[in-house]
Length: 173
Image (cartoon, rainbow, N blue to C red; front, side, top):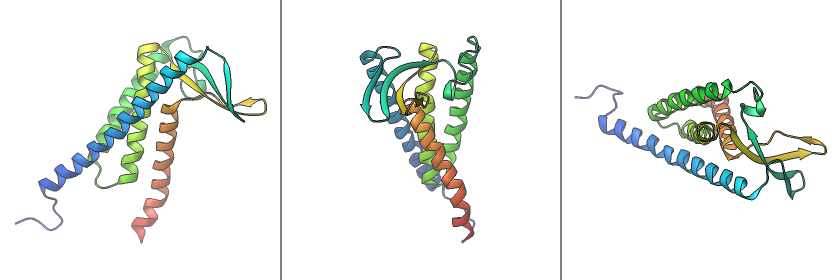
């Protein structure tokens, strides 16, 4: 006889399988990120600006630092520091993702962040820097160049914040 509210082992396995499927999204993000970075490196000269649309260029840039080139000029130690931070963060998010129970927005968020973090982690380990190529600007101001991995991380973080802001209200009703 099962206790009231107890979850069957079959339901737990199904939940873990569903959450593992979100890792396919992570793999798609990694694949698209590495593919587009390869295209940028093979088709662009470093520092060259190729106009695509008003307020948007393609440009090849290398970032040895973190977001917005934070600590880019720190002398080299930052490569190992950011590699370790990314690896630990990915492991924590993997565990979190695999333990979720039906939280699709959180699962999607984590999958996007994991995929983006792995894409940039690959660059950092293999190249010593992250390859960036998307350049948005307004008049003379250029937003720091970024890549698809950064976009996935940002979208994942936004989805997590939205879920945190509105999930409480949904649970209160």
